[in-house]
Image (tube, rainbow, N blue to C red; front, side, top):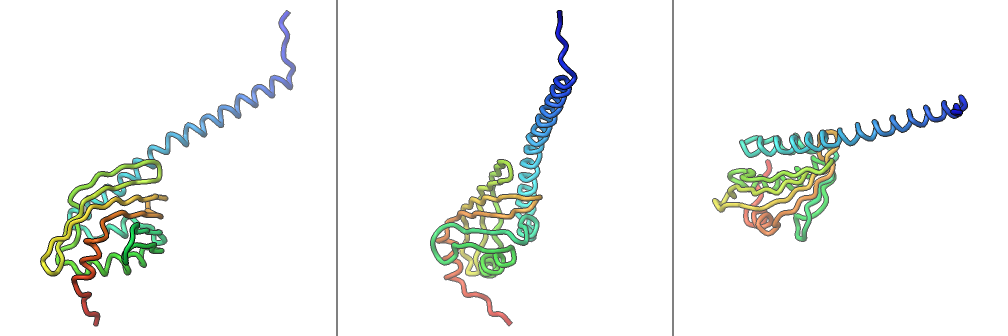
Length: 174
């Protein structure tokens, strides 16, 4: 004799099966979208570096969220935390760039992505206004959100960077 489960047990089994299916499909959708976000973040940063290397001048507006937190690691006068893209550009980028005859451009790069983080290890080269070359190695770690970097941690040799700031006078403002 085969026992038939009661109507309540059948309903419970069906409900549990449906819930398990929903949870699994939700997890699978989330897991499958993560590589898409990772690939898209990597593409955004890679393409911005490519444009910059080709002579573009919009890298920071292309990649950084307006409220980015940018940290330059290390010790010395240039290390520190910059709150927002405008503050970072005004206090770190513009004073340095104003002392260059040719801007720093990435000459080589390696780009790695892991979830919402993109890491770029790159070599940069430019020329100071006194004719001396500027070269440096960088590692920038971006935490991306909706296609923009909301946090950046930058590692570089601050000695050559600070040397340009110390050696070349700031341009006179009118």
